[in-house]
Structures are given as structure tokens and as C-alpha cells.
Amino acid sequence: MTTNRETHEYLTFAPAGQMCAGCGKRIGALEPVRRGMLAPETGTPVVVYRHVTCRRMAASASPS
Ligand SMILES: [Zn+2]
Image 1: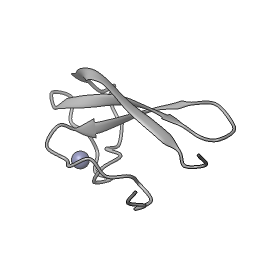
Image 2 (image 1 turned 60 degrees about the horizontal axis):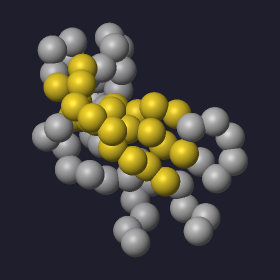
Image 3 (image 1 turned 135 degrees about the vertical axis):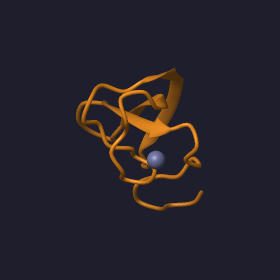
């Protein structure tokens, strides 16, 4: 498989200034988010945050 893999880990709060990977909006300090790990084919996995209210969607829409 060559697609990026993302796993949602747990519900948490994002550090200040984080952007939602789902809608691209800034995440508020007291907004609960899902913390996820985006693992590219190559390179370092990056942590992403997403509003719990945002539907699960990839940043680059690629339905599988
Ligand atoms: Zn969002």
C-alpha cells in the first residue's frame, strides 16, 4: 500500500495554535480534538489534530 496511513489515537486537547486537519480551521484552546498520527510512506510520522465534530476525511481527499 502506498497511501498515507493515519490512525486516531485518543481524545485530547490540542496545543495552542494547532490547525484542524479536517476543516483547516484553528483549534480553540478548549476544544476537544482527536489526536492522530499521519504516517507518510517515507519520512517522519506527524501528529495531527482534528475536531471531534469534523468527519473523518483526509487532507487530500482520497476515498478508498
Ligand atoms: Zn475541524
